[in-house]
Image (cartoon, rainbow, N blue to C red; front, side):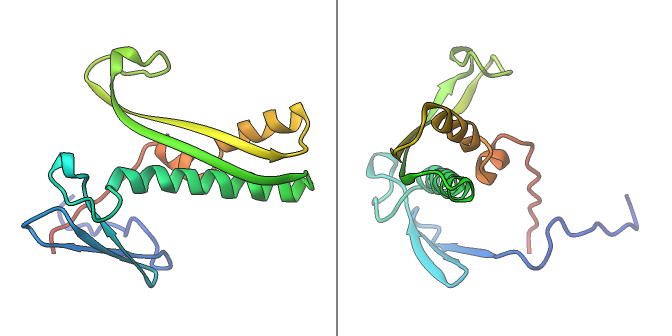
Length: 153
């Protein structure tokens, strides 16, 4: 591809996250869309547990997106959904232990997601909301092919 310029992967209208950390530890300062937070690793992994870990943020994003998507869907349908609680856990699992996975060698990331719906919903409405949980944008991103371009600047 000599002489060709590549198109930007993403449009300029998207939010940018800026992450900065000292090379002496795991603590990272994150600035995203005017919000500041600290990310770290747990003590047992060598961090100081000053904030959530990167995987904590990943499953939190999935949980928040799931809850938002279900709430939006129920509002549009005018269903009596009062609240959504999503509990998530992340772990590395052996691929051979994953019946639903294509890969059968090495380690995979596993996420368990429990969705609790509060409200006077029918069995059919609950079943439909469970299907919708798998259609939240973050779920779709995590289960699709992702292109990440990294440049040294």
